[in-house]
Image (cartoon, rainbow, N blue to C red):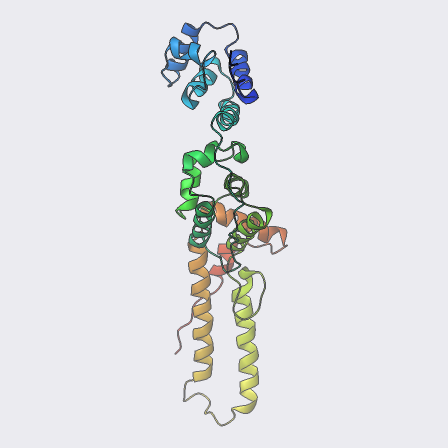
Length: 284
């Protein structure tokens, strides 16, 4: 006589969690509570969830909602049981590592898609339900990140990498790319915090004018326009417009994060206020 294979421990833990959440409620009253709170479900479905096979995620969340339990915890317990009942194929660790050239949301989104492709192209639902993600991924947030609509947070980015089976090197590269995006582009003249670009440009223009005045004694004084100064002013205005456009492209969350980093560095002034101190000049 063949023995019936033992069910996974994770499935038994899921049923135990469901029984604890149900408590003394009857299946009928639990079904009414869940339906009244926006998750219609039948008493028969709830009864089967505690006795037979692996219930659906919807049913598990309906139990949690009807009983007033933690739905996120319910999702994590279900994900562990689902992975144990339907184990996926063993896959090799992701070999793709993003480079240092990624400095935009679109670039990070492209890198995330490459990591996802290297993992076999799992769906958003599979990534969100992955036990490795620890319940930290929602499909909507992941969709926004993969389409470049929003910059993902560090927690979501690390959970995404874990769900894709990425190694530490790939995870560190993704997080480093996000840090570069938040910091913004470096000034062309010299590396440093980008918010000082206006002051740097003005200082360098003044130094150039002083050096040029010592050797250009042949240029008439007031009768002819100073073409060299005009060029410096134009360069300064181009640099200002580039910086202002970059600031305007930031979302409110990214701007707040950048301002916090600026405050921590002791800059002491609002980023947008600093840019408005520069007045573009048109050569006379």
